[in-house]
Amino acid sequence: MKIRASKVCRVLAAALPLLLLSGCSVFMAANQPDKKDLSVLTAGTPRARLLQEFGQPLSSRLLGEKRVDLFSFVQGYSKEAKAGRAFGHGVGDLATGGLWEFAGTSAETVFDGKKLSFEVTYNRSDFVERVVRLN
Image (spheres, helix red, strand yellow):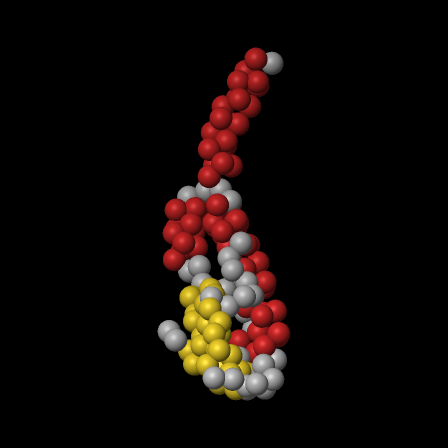
């Protein structure tokens, strides 16, 4: 009985670091920024719809009778892409006994979305008139 208990303890002691290490890239992939709907950046879209999609602008000013907003955000990934990446990292973790975390975590740090900035000009009725991508 003592031999069995000591083997179980050794297996648990060996597995514990793997359990603690694994999952970081899975977590990072699942929590990447969401994909924004850029189709709202077209002429005729109400300002309220842009605020709903992107949140409050970094700045907003009046230029004559027209409002000009500056939006900046990180363009992320669809739910399907995030789930697929998380699943792939999980499989990699299991297949390599946790060694995948070195590559997976590095990859998730690099591929964490792209920062986008837009200047949006509205007409008097607060409908998009012009959109300029700044980066």
